[in-house]
Image 1 (cartoon, helix red, strand yellow):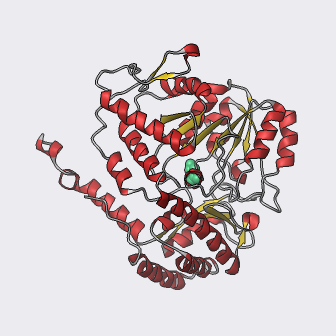
Image 2 (cartoon, protein in one colour):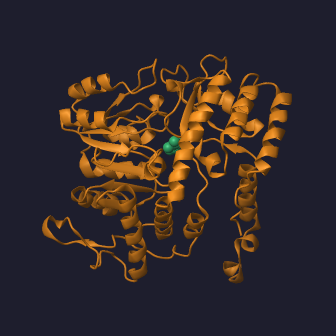
Image 3 (cartoon, rainbow, N blue to C red):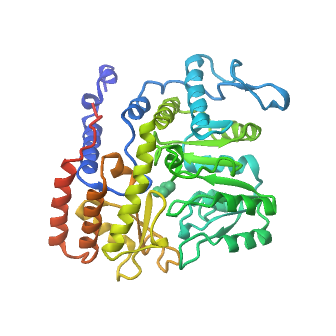
Length: 435
Ligand code: DSN
């Protein structure tokens, strides 16, 4: 490699990687993206993520906590361990202040690399190893970082899991309240990755108060719907909130933690020096851009459209003969129960991707199959809503899914569906941001 190659554009410096990025763009462009946790970011977010801010180390925060009880942030004091962060301080401050304004909280930490470390930092800040915690069961829609035995959270803390009432697919709040009295958790985690209904934050608060537990809401999936005022907010009920920024928020990959000022100090300490080191300032800049875009009126229209599309899509799926967990959705995602078929969610999602429909297999409540097989498929509306899909298109998608899943070995039919999808996708191109 010559020194000149260091100054070449990607296309010339590394045609192999450039070619793969181009191929990924083409893959996404020619198929229907229904993975509920994925989205296409705004152009300005992509630009900020790729901005030349990656040279700088900026351990610490753009403030110091100097006042009484070390709680109030002094923005003018140097809180970094490296010199030369005057501009980075301004970028991070913008991201923090915009996150606080967008969600209406006193405190935000914007340095989190992703959702799982965000949850890790919250546990580190507020509970001790071995403490009792409660969270949604993975098979009922929870997340690995909510105490799965194969995850750090389940290895360090004593988790008890709650689930849904199998018939209704709704969280079993009565059992949760009863189990909480018995388990005496220090913390209860609300929020999930495959729960199609609105979480009742009032009930969670009451249950936490009844046992003196902290309430952590992980709103990674529905944060964009909250930001767009199309979904109730956990602010005012939760003690701490975590969210990723790349799902319904349409921001860069990463996460934030939201809380009140009082809890901020412990969160700061858990993030740095506790768990993370040098923050990624390019991603923080992109988060600032994302929060600004989420405050625009058109983002509220988008968030409502995501929900309207998911609801309509769910009804169409039912018309096509599918059973949905909880019989529908209030949010951006749908969980299809395939237990009435003679194949797994894995087989179903593999047949769908052959036809150009990208989904993920997912456990359903009471699932007899293991996680690599599952008896369900999770579908989401955010990505295709971003690209302009409405009722007509989601009705077509439901009918394509039926044609594929009614006969998953019929390659001729799968090919026909694939061609129809490729034709429709041409009318909904992704903006091509690759230089
Ligand atoms: N949050 C997961 C998902 O919902 O796909 C990934 O960690």
